[in-house]
Length: 492
Image (cartoon, rainbow, N blue to C red; front, side, top):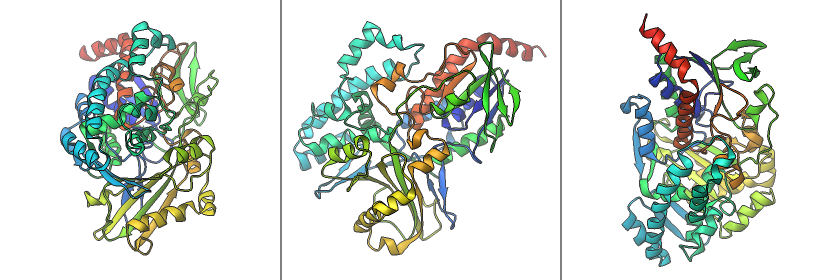
């Protein structure tokens, strides 16, 4: 059997890893328009040789990630995870600063000390623990064959029980009185490009899970996972065709049977597309792209700096009027005067990223889409962010060796839908059965999909769940083909 992937993001890499482990006789080819694999899971390189993650930084669901790699036969010793504790520091514009800790008792004490709501936090954890048990397998760790799947009476009752009709922030009012705590336990929808005041509370399980399992870091950078998977796949005989954009996916007689490169069709038994919807739809013969709402854009600043940076590994710097800031960005499409700012300082725990005596730093700010670097420079947004960093890191400007900037328009040119950094937006009408599935079109056989825009969602281990659902669906639908091939190989 001969299958191909269009796009070498983490969804493709892990699906190929899992498939080749289970069906080693399959010939697999991965096409990628860029000069390296990883998609969003990539890195920025500086002139002095320093590197830092370009996209994802926070490793959630570490136990899931480990079990996924183990299931695909990936050598356990190839990936070293380091726990980050405190998870992160939160700094509010009003001067309040507190930490999140993995230990539940210590976290309850911290919240009681600052807000007098330690018992409310314990109640939150107990409630979300039960909701996670229901929500994970019922809605996340399963595929859908049609939108009507979600209208089963049992699922509708569970959605009501989980209060999926509430936003992540609205749901926090059931637990916390202090607005700063409500923000602290709902801002995580920004991890997947969603406004906490609009994103369904199902996605509010993210902050619960990071509290329950902690936050982790991949030594060498999260991007190194993509590199390691590529190396393992090459050992298994997988062919990578980098710098090779695909013109289209050929569909004949209701079946995807080839990818076309430079006008030349290359036949395959199945084709898997990995990229943002609706952009990938434009490649498929006979498909009219649907209308989707993209996720939020981000402004990203990357620095290599002289000396050590006195910041935690992860930090959120939040405005007093967080709700107003979100409205400005998501509803008005304008830059916030004091935006939420996330800083990532991996050099604090990983000396391999930068030359001795230097550090790397990553800054992310949610912003409207369709903005170029000059928009941020003319508005003073970049200068504002650097000034805020210097307020925490004395003489920061003088210590900067090099700065790189990535805007929403840079993301769009890379291939992210309308410059949204996280695929399509995590809204109710674009979630679960309403999201593109592993088999995105009932009328096209042997065409499959994976990635941040495909169910279940964005985030590395979650996209990898999508890869598992993809492999399962392919096995169900192509079983006769690979079983016949396996028998043929064994008889030789």
